[in-house]
Image (cartoon, rainbow, N blue to C red):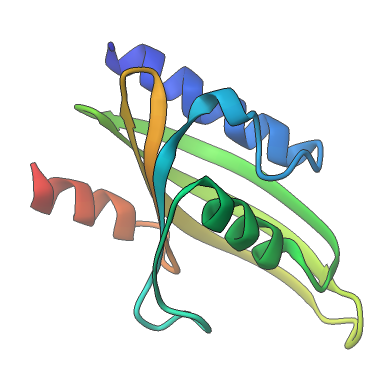
Length: 133
């Protein structure tokens, strides 16, 4: 697959998330997809398989009254796509509003996402991609 195609696949996932279609179009995910939380996340570690990916995505959005996610940059790096994301969220119980940037590193093979790894910092995915190339 071309880098351009990989970016379009990742873009489609974010578009689905923006419409609250979680976890996104199943046809875009490999059955053995990995979902990777950073070491300092509430629940760090890697989840394996489509069911675990789906639960992790749903859990990430749970508890927020509103959640708007806006990808600002898609940077193709071979079979990976680093994405810088701006998000706005409102926590339903405390009323806290959050506006922040984070990043994600998606790995796409054969037209399907095989790995999703997110990071707290907006540049962390780029750093991770360059270290792995």
